[in-house]
Length: 78
Image (cartoon, rainbow, N blue to C red; front, side, top):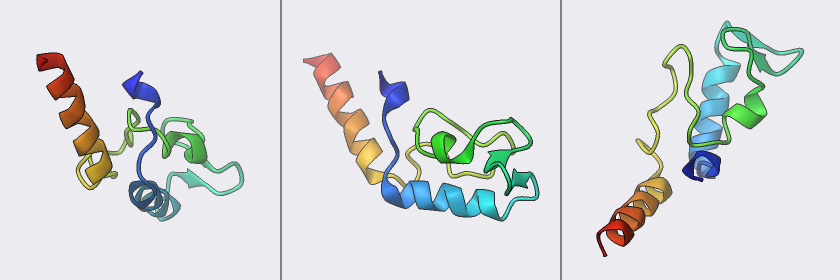
């Protein structure tokens, strides 16, 4: 289920900004020409990554996601 967790608004905006500046971004279809994914959906989910490794790594700038992982680790150890 962690696959469907959305990133924070801050991280989402960073991902979108990076994509809009990328030469592989197709403005007409709002799609990445490298992987074929639609930007709006791809940038939203924590599980996704940039095929050109341009995005910050999952949780790197997303404090909310780091805290959520800490909670899951704590629950697992209880």
